[in-house]
Length: 270
Ligand SMILES: Nc1ncnc2c1ncn2[C@@H]1O[C@H](COP(=O)(O)OP(=O)(O)OP(=O)(O)O)[C@@H](O)[C@H]1O
Ligand SMILES: [Mg+2]
Image (cartoon, rainbow, N blue to C red; front, side):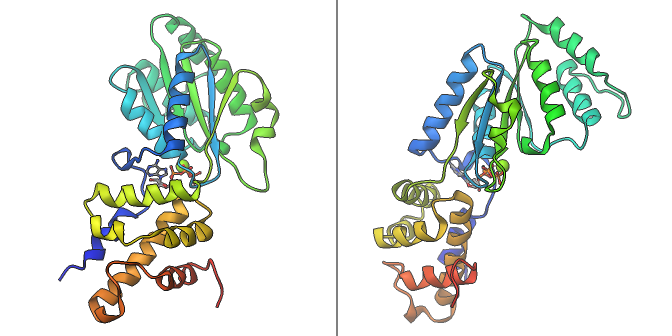
């Protein structure tokens, strides 16, 4: 028999799918800010935040929402080199299938963009842009200077390197949108809403405030860590459900199970 926790586990598989997007106070704020920035005559918009704070899902969401009315393209993985990037960009701009080995020269690309000015307005979403070097970013900026292509650049911030402090992000052409880890209340809303979206009412209700508090302590409100922890919690619940159902309280999740999950994921030591 399929355990009731099986579908709950599914809810927290880490994926970036705009269908799973949850409207939270901070994510709605970031979304609106992004939408508003796109309406300004800005060329470069920076979305940044630590890994797992929802940058990719935000870009996916904006693409999905705007694609009916705007020319918007999502570049998920950074190109391995300039050549590949220009090739990809040129293909998007010309809407033509270029031969794979065709060389796209940078100045040709810039000229092409200049010609598009006033005719088309293209938005490129560049995810994982920390992988692009300063040289590339400079060229991307030059392309945006033509004003026919706007870039939304997503960067992840690591503890040891403050990318935003780098010179090329300091100039005034950038508008910055920062994504942060969720607060305890927001994370609780995230967990509840995700479960309710799949009609898992009882399971959603079994998470009480003290559970949410503990989950927030372990994950610091990071969405990816939260997904991992919840997945593990339901894995353990599933085990009890199938093997020792008398040990589980279906109305209230025990903090013990949350601690066991944290242990399993290495958040705490024995
Ligand atoms: N508002 C939201 N609604 C639904 N899911 C979200 C939301 N924010 C974050 N998530 C989920 O959290 C996880 C991490 O989000 P995402 O992959 O977008 O983070 P990221 O900032 O792009 O991380 P990285 O820097 O590692 O690429 C994903 O599974 C995503 O679905
Ligand atoms: Mg990402």
